[in-house]
Length: 272
Image 1 (spheres, one colour):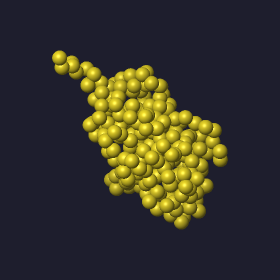
Image 2 (cartoon, helix red, strand yellow):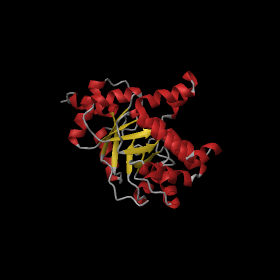
Image 3 (cartoon, one colour):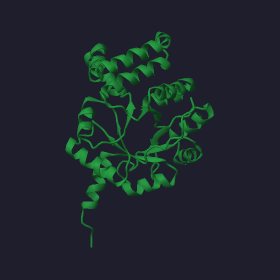
Image 4 (cartoon, helix red, strand yellow):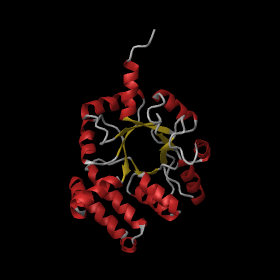
């Protein structure tokens, strides 16, 4: 499948259901950020995220799925049927239908326990939590991306890209190993629409090294969306964004916490 050239948003605001930001504050921060530079909202589907979306101004949605930690916690606490049922309840008949169709198409892979079938089912299960929201882009979460990378499972990564595009979404990967992933994708001829990974002036979480990441970004044909911009609140957000763009990032992922910190910094009176 040969997709048309696509340019991802230059700014994505990450709305994290676990960061404790109340809906009115989240809505205000998102509205201010996207008024300054139009972009998209990056989410990890959950019940709280779905409630937050109601409060947010209209904007394209990019979803990172699945949230394996939350899914495994739910399965351990409630059992697999109830964990799955709670996710499908939000998706209604449409979500159930998509999951069933995905399961049938990947039945042979599921019987073998192959990630080629397991991952599409997990994606549909988590995407159902968004209800009627249709994300413009979907990224495979870092936990699974980096597992497939370590296993050298090029065919599965390529299949995830094809699966997401067939479902009508732009296909991406989230990673904590940007300097490893980008060259491997190029060598395997796997062409996602975007990749999300850490880029910042401190080299924080840039693996294997900051130099390797920057070189990989410069060489990669795949648009990179820089995350971990403020390097655990050690770099001013404006400086971090400027750095990411200067180093070749196609866009940036800004958290609500980073936006709130930047807003607080601007509100503080300057020393004489």
